[in-house]
Image (cartoon, rainbow, N blue to C red; front, side, top):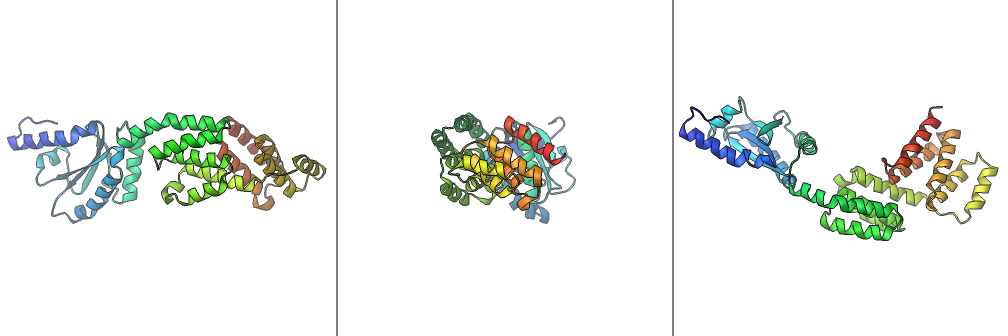
Amino acid sequence: MATLGLSAADREEIETFRRDVIEPSMTSLIILDFWAEWCGPCKALSPVLEKIAANYATKGVILAKIDVDANKAIAAQFRVQSIPTVYAVFQGKLVADLTPARTETAITTIIDQLLKQLPIQGEAQALDAEIAPLIAMGEEVLAAGDAERAAGIFVQIVEMAPNDPEALSGFLRAQVALGQISQAEAFLAELPPELVKNPAIERAMSAVALARDAKPVGDLAGLAAEVAASPDNHERRFELAGGLMAAGDRDGAADHLLEIIRADRDWNEGAAKAQLLKLFDVVGVMDPWVSSQRRRLSAVIFT
């Protein structure tokens, strides 16, 4: 920021800005709010920005308010022509103009995008980096079939990061694997609404729903023989798919659900497809098995 030809007061103003805004912006995202005491819209926007900054403080977001009357040199440097003018600054550079976004939802949408794109170093990011390998370990243990150990790992992670959706999802799915369906449902009921909408939590919800639907069958061989003898009995085939899921045979379950879809995709209001998609969610969208089964589903639907 140029200082040549400026007065001593202006240079002091710019030096203060460098210390309070530019230097912190090397690791944090600065919300730069140009305002004035006489500006009504500025006063209306100020509580919104303060709330956002408080909510995002652990993610490395800082609010810096610049009174344009007291900081004319800074306002001139940023070519501020009207107020409120709100910018996002990272590493000394403007990375977004937040001025048109006057609502909390609009502003946070932009901030969320910036946090995904920029290497901002906040407490939340540091914690994410710390727990990421632990979450990977828990997922690996759960996939290997040791639900009890996986639950223990995820409990420790949740103690470190109580609102981390990946950790919560892992814990819930471990509960399901242990047969603790009611406990998982009670845990889900206590989660904040904003967490329930997270894809990781939705995956856990699918696991709970699937576990409720996939009831063990006492005589799987007998039910399989009955279905073989009456292949158009979709209700019994659907029951067989549930029994196979409960027994851990996802290949067999998928085969029977796909057969129902092939024969009558609208049977029971599309119950077979809905059940198959729940199974996909539980296994994980990135799993090679899911990719393979999705191709089979597409082939059934489009042929």
